[in-house]
Length: 179
Image 1 (cartoon, rainbow, N blue to C red):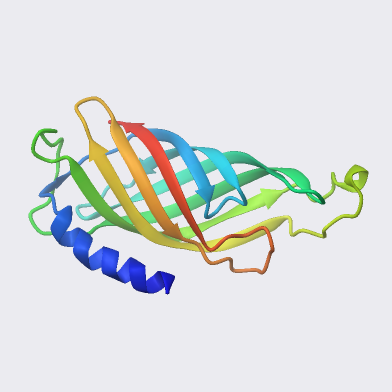
Image 2: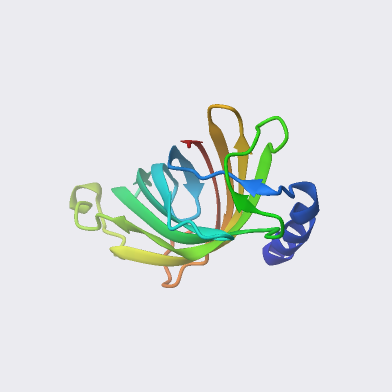
C-alpha cells in the first residue's frame, strides 16, 4: 500500500512542484525520524557531484535507542543520488526566491545504522542485535527555497536489507540548509 502512495505522489509532484531551476545545497543540519535510524537522529548532510539533472548527497546522523531490554547509541549514514523530477528547462543557477519556492527531487541510494550491541549486559538479557543494518533507500525530497535558507523535507521508503526488529520501513526527515 505504501509504494502505491509514493507512485501517486511522484506523478502529481511533477505538476505541483515543477520548477525550471534548482538550487545547490552546500550543507544542511536536520532531524531524521525512523527510516535509516531506529528511532530518531540529529543529522548533517552535504551535497556534491552536481550534474545537469542530478547530484549526490551524503548524510550522517547520531541518535539513541532506548527500549526496556535494549539501550544503545546509534550512528546512521546514507549515500543517495537525487534526480530532478522535471529535468526539462533546468540549469544550475541560483533561483529568484519569489518565483521558485519549491524544488522536488527523487532520491535513491543506500543507508543503514550501527548500534552498540555489547553494552547491554547491565540491563538484563541481550537482544542479540545486529551491529550493522543496511537498508535500501527511495523517496522524495522537497526543498523550500528562501532568500537565506533552504528548508528540506524528505519522505523515504527504507526497506532493511538484513532482518532486524529495530529497523523501520519508512521515515521522514526535516532540515535547514544553506547555499
